[in-house]
Image: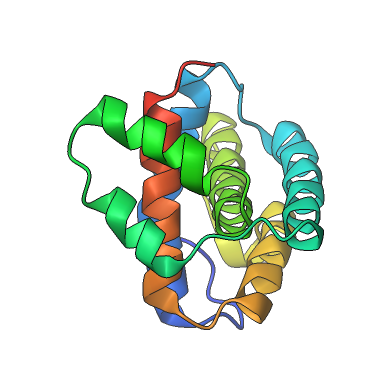
Length: 163
């Protein structure tokens, strides 16, 4: 059975990330990203660099802008707003780190099950390692609802974008 590990991360985050892991994996796969442990490690490195670039260059958005994008029902309008207001900001990159982390863990799960082994996330090295990006994000973020909103918006954006 798929589940995220219970490390020293607040359960509200674990439950949310567990709920997005399969969606994040499928979205990456549908976009031709070939999610696996190796590609997720490289993606974490890239997203971390992008976060620090956004941070150092003052590219931020407000939680009100995240809420506004969440209220946009038209897909084309949403993508346009996201591109112009949220994409490549600190919230966008923190959401990316969480999504990649969830994808990484789910990729480890898929590989384990495909090998015919039983999934035990608390004994899986990839699971332990993929929690590092989550710990990093949670050391910065204090508002669980805004993080949840940023991740949901980013997943929607990833599902709609053409790249």
